[in-house]
Length: 233
Image 1 (cartoon, rainbow, N blue to C red):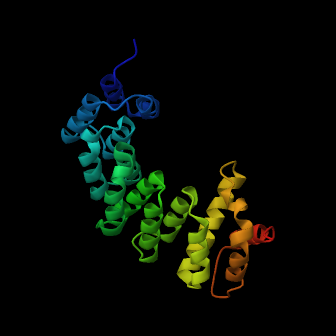
Image 2: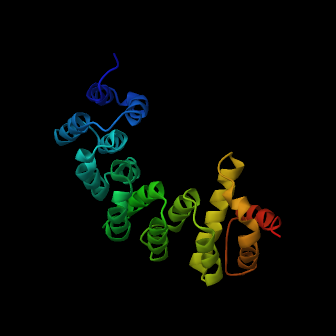
Image 3: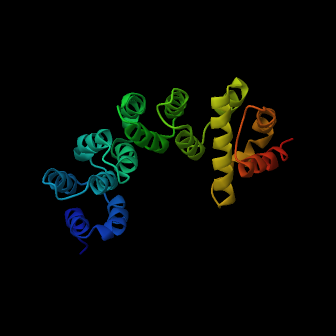
């Protein structure tokens, strides 16, 4: 008989090096209130680091852990805890976490917390999530390269990417070109090729952006985008 989820949690708490194995097994199982409660108790007793607790509570997926994961996200303790906590909120409540994550990416006091929430929105992949991410990036609540990585992974709707390019604003052009760059890197690494599918639609706008003398970027990225644009018809 396999170990219970609570026993798996105990194993990860005793040996943090086992967390990847334990996390993968927990994700295959149904949400477990007892296992989530054991993690909450361990955190309150100072027996478990925030990053481990946030990650495993997300893998367990029981709503018992939501409040603590949210607390960890807001406290921004470091060691990737925030990047685990944001997705964990989405894993626990699914689309029901959307409103909360949109609020957190906009209003959380610490940048690390807002960027953790952005990672959570990436898991929901809805138009509302995209809009919240774009607003957070345009207002400086999250860094533009963080927003680009998340939006490329969703992926961003082509019409939204076109809007960024058409704006003519340097910050928005920087975000748009970075989204394309990240997506091209993902595609070349064996990931989704969506960016090539929209080359004909977005490529001409990107060509205009690359001709803007105020838009600075690393030579490697410029070469990368120019090669993509050249395939647009």
